[in-house]
Amino acid sequence: MKSTIELYGYNETEIKKIATNITLTEYPSEQVTKITKIQTVWMDDWGGIIKNVSEWEGRKSIVTIVNVRTTNKFKKSKTRKVSFRTVNEYREHPIATLDSWTQYKLDESLVLEVVNNNYDHITKEMAQTLIDMDKIEKAEAKAQKQKEDSIKNIVREINYNLRCRNPRSPKQLKTSFKKYDNDLLEESKLQLSEEGSNLLSEVQKELALPVVDKSNPKSLLKTVTNSNVVELCEEIEKTFDSESEEYRRRAIEWLRKQERFEKASDKIIQSEADYIVASNKWKLFGCVIRNLDKYDINSINKVSFNNGPQGFEGVWELTLGDNTTKKFNARSIIVYGYHVCTHYRYIGTVTK
Image (cartoon, rainbow, N blue to C red):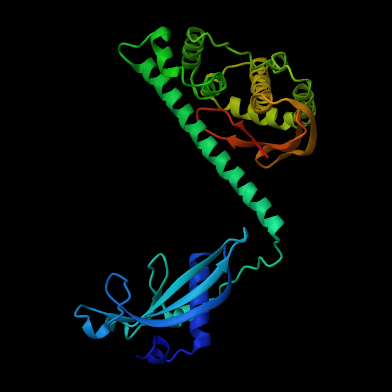
């Protein structure tokens, strides 16, 4: 049986290059390490290999399969199978396919300028670190998505109740909101009107939850029993305060563009901006306390903490009472919106 290579005049080196280019096109984050196998087989219309061609009565075609071995930055290896097809309708323009079933013309794929990645310098230890960070990022993304969905549900429920012809009382609403923690309810107020925020505060009272004063972040620390956590918050506060003036300036600019502040005095706008900055500091403290206050912590050592393009980010090493260590990772994202002032949302994770 003639192979695809013989039928179309491509030599083995060219077939390997085509397979490599197609693989890197569909998997640009991988590195092609080698071609492990080239075999030509008969296949049916469903991609099954026909072993006894003489007894086969259905439609069949000759397919050359090239096994391409790849790896990624996590040192995870895969074998990608690029199929070169010789079915009649493609005799003028032979094609190859991979996992997406996109049809690649061989002559075009041969001249593709695709850069192969090089992960040879990544050690097993480095790869494990990347895997751990990837897990953290995925967990954070999942937690953030769940948080955003919850906030949307809270805002939707409150706004619906305000528009409803027969609105429910705060006492009737509390059943719908008891599944949310108080921090989430407080953050939802940033996306509500003053009327909606007041209604949610009444629901919190019915749930026997404190309606917190976000203009006084220090008050939050009074609830913390671990002195190491308090010291960490105070250390973070110094960095936050040194960066907060620029954030306050942006808040003032945003407030002046809002219809409800068109006629407000400078004093009122500045006071509102102060509240916005303080509430973000409050949420930063809340992220630390929510994640760390439950641990028996002997000491906390800063690995890094700074204010980057996405807000405040930091990593700390925790030494627990049993002398084991954990890593606390705090990140933030900047949330923008038409009805809500630009603000930070903080994400915290504790890992081994």
